[in-house]
Length: 545
Image (cartoon, rainbow, N blue to C red; front, side, top):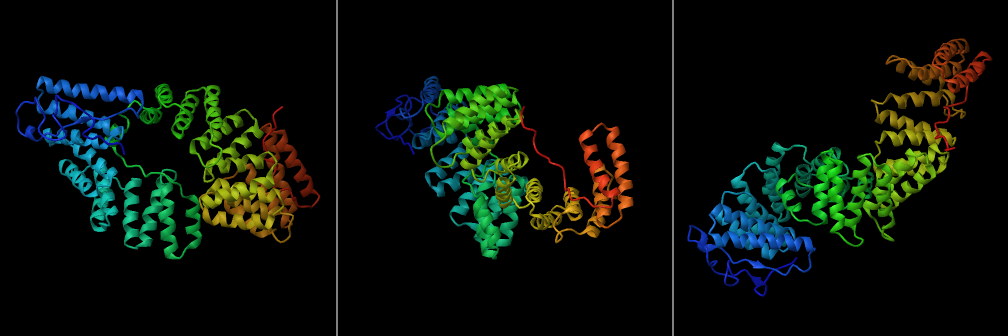
């Protein structure tokens, strides 16, 4: 925390010391109680921030010199206090915000910003009072309800916190910060089942934004006695703030002309699909963020993202490469992980699969819980023939999210390619039960039961039953192929051959020679009264020429 003291330069137009009534101000109700304000040493901040603070300070001095009215003077005190608070000079910001509040007691911003200031300094009693004043001015303010609820929780005021989060839930029932607050309240009451319900719901809203909730979820599951889920959530935890829907704080966060504020402006522009403005904000952020730091890497990755979305993959790749080149020697780094992932996507589009694999590996190195990168690595390895290597990454992806359908599908395919048919069958049985709305798992299972070379796995009658049920939902050539496979497995070769000929005729009319060759091979088997043992043709990626 940076602080101002009596030793700092005092604006003489406003005060004669560190206390007392400001000099030179017109007499009006409340002005006799205005506090002295200081001009702290800002040498530790960026030049752009020093200039911004200087302009706000000069504007305040001018308003006092001209004898501005209460509303105008309140705005000037508040503007200067906001710059100081955003720059983390809290002691210097406080009297400015208090003066602004005294001059305009009906304005919510000043008590609200004071609430954050006191909370940052650990003065929870004053934070409660300030946030409470904000709610008196605007009783339905969602952010104030959440922040005041958090302060009460920090002081073990569970009843007060619960009442506030319940009020917030009537305004935004699916807000992650509200669900997180209700989850914390339930944990504090040792109502672990309720905590699980709230926290799992928050993860369902946005798993990445709610990453930090894996830790309290693990506590709840462990107290319930479910150690398997507890361990899974412990592995997925990441130290990420739970963001509050908070326009006033965003105004403060984006106030300064520094790296962080420009990043926030750029993110806003990205959300509005304004790629050009987003890139400009990120570039400005890079200009005022020298050296190599997590913030600079984040800005550069986001610049690459804006360029990519704006249709410039080559320029985007240059930015991503610079982020990767600036990676720390050890440890985790989310921006580096995302840059690797972005480069992997670009390399996949170029059909440069080895390079894509290397970048997917870089992504999971710098963020092991990066689910999309883990799955992308597994899929690319499998489809480029590195099937055995893919299995571990599918299993890691499923450990992060057991219900991830694409990972379950790829994992089963990899096991089948490796001849691990019993494992594949067991995995598919679980997937069928988990994904009742995904008929492709039933289809894959029925084909495996029909053609698996392993006698312990094959079950022609069950395969036939499954595929006939699937056909009730619609007919496709692939389902027809599977039906013929199952019929051949149960010895009905004539019907299998008849169905295969009909499918072959359709495929020939569609002009697919590779598919026609596959169908012809199986047709010859059925005509000679033999079943097929070919599960699926290769779904690999074509190597670049």
